[in-house]
Image 1 (spheres, rainbow, N blue to C red):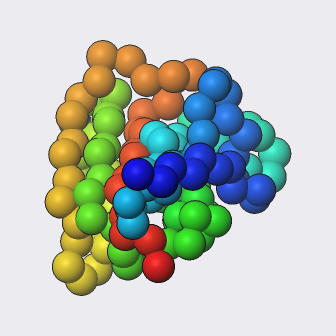
Image 2: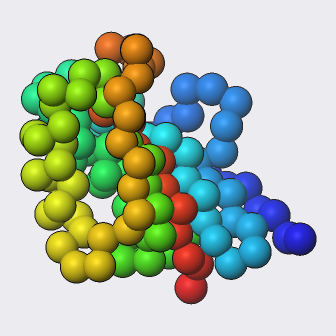
Length: 127
């Protein structure tokens, strides 16, 4: 099995010992992304909609660096600090996957890093 770990040069700075993505056996596995602005390194604690949009933009940036795209996503994991935010997150999420959306799990996490409300990871096909 070949395995290549990488960092997206224009992605958000990693805040721990992890890669933005790992490519293995034709798939790319994207680490959980939150609402960090890659240009400034600041975390956006705005609305859940704003946080969801930035998290998904970060996923898209990392997928592109790994040779994939949002259209090739097979599965997402969505972590919410409060399940009451599901409708707001879901409305933005639907904009990114208007046709043939990927499989998805959405769970409420007791707490997310740095007080964020949303974190999203993804698995996609490469190429």
